Length: 450
Ligand SMILES: [Zn+2]
Image (cartoon, rainbow, N blue to C red; front, side, top):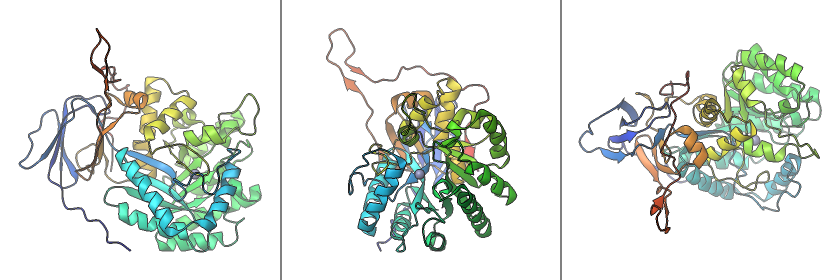
């Protein structure tokens, strides 16, 4: 086991001339001892401060991923690729790969992914970790990765019974062992159990286990095109019954796409009442769902704008990068949000802002992050984007010019600028329109979570 990397207290940091997500321009932000201590139009740098001229670019709280699989990431092609592109072949393929895995190889791939994440301004990730393995190899590997990346990235782990809590022998005992080792969230996969009844029983068992231990819950729930897959109703019921409001997440919820509208009109208020968070995984849902359809093909993503309108907190997850389920991806939460925006047709200004929030503020709520945001007193975690507004960041998948964690710069990236050789035209160009809109009425001011 290697020593934990140490972080000394960084010098004060002053970011000047930034645009904030709420549209305020020319803002300075001061960070001292890892916290934001001032945000104002003009601030003086204290002696010895590191200074960054933001040149009017967008300064945002960091990206947060509410749904990922760090134990399978970067394993694409091992031992073969997913030929059908379906969820079920992906699960079979992962089963073939599991006996070949080593703790070292899982950790090495996860650490490489965390480097990508930090460079992309993604500083908090909730990752599911498969517990259907007597050796708990992936659990041990990711607990070590969590310890090693802690200075620059918050990794939250979910005990995930990939092969079914009741369907896979020993899964419940292994899940409890994983929690004993320090995994902090209870996972599940009710739609993969042998019957609807077993699925409902798994939801009840897991919610009761979480209530007993004071833990959060995040279940893969109804990741199916079957409109009768209704485990989200059971999840909302037990959340409400056990007083777990605000601590439970239903991930995927893709069956809602195919459900009867009348039933959904009853379901949405139940999810909202129970304070269950919803996570859509746009890149994965649009590629895995609808695979049994001819034409027209269902999109499969859950009803994002309708959930939001019902008062449910909705986040977007990346879910997979280069693994048995998805052969693409690069830790870019702007790509995730842009796909969500397209699939849900959230092209209005308010819709675009909501998609930006879904990979920042909403995901921070799902993880229960403390001190997230750009207000005084928040952790000094932020990303400077080469864009003038959140919607421009989405349009351009903007460069992460600078990433700050705990008041220290942890990554820098050169601006994307093309050098032109076209007589009569400028000699360089970026893709910013130099134009941005103001925040829509009711948009959050200086988003923060305490
Ligand atoms: Zn997943």
